[in-house]
Image 1 (cartoon, rainbow, N blue to C red):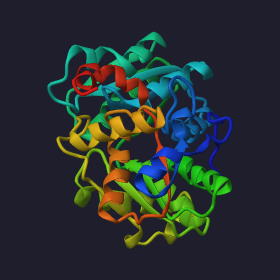
Image 2: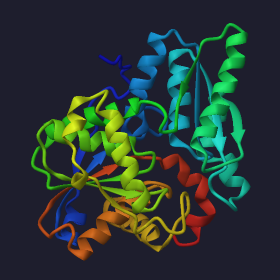
Image 3: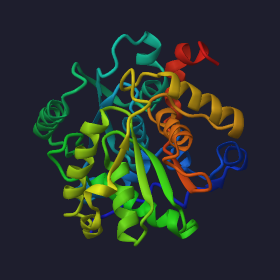
Length: 329
């Protein structure tokens, strides 16, 4: 049994979107995980419940985590660390080329600094193993000072403990409404996508789960989800019921790359704001809601389907992309 720290204190809303449903010709619900957890919230709060449960069970006094400059995961880890009396160390990876000083100083970075996080930098954006190694080197130095560090890993070399948070979320959603045909969610590291799919299958739901890839091509992301699922099966037996045909990845909004907006993402932000009054972030949710629009338009999501769109949050990053968003708003 894996220890869990309660961060998401109650079920997040499953909201009906009547205007978008009418526009798209589907029955659309929005799972408001942008409201999960503290300090702008987001899906990573569910993952952190298990990482912090493990850290506290080991008596940790310091949390180390790595992510992109505008990492929601890192910002939430800082907030939870502070609430638990732990010292947060955030390593920021240079994943997005050509960004302004605003990108590097505002949004999630600003919030983490306000909360007193120690900031490290890592110059590479596509070296997950190297980023983890850098964290372990810092952790080893802390141990020499009689500190008790806990590392939240990024690479595929470690158990996907955070995916258990979306195994829980799958059950939470099914308790709210159990007859969805399709789920759409952002797919980045893969823990949210894999955990949601495993949780649904483990609970007996055959609904399709479509992950909108935000970092890699579908040809790369699909196998990554499969590998994550294999590792997750060692933590949650229900993951073993997932077959290759269950893993669906769409990458139509990926271009021009991670942390960068193309026309599908821009249109998604406009549509959600105009019809629902909700914001989407440029890195994850703009690209995942773009999948809903495109797949309904193409017929892959049939008219009349019951669709659950998982809003994973990340809204603090909006302020880091002010120049980009101002150009089309």
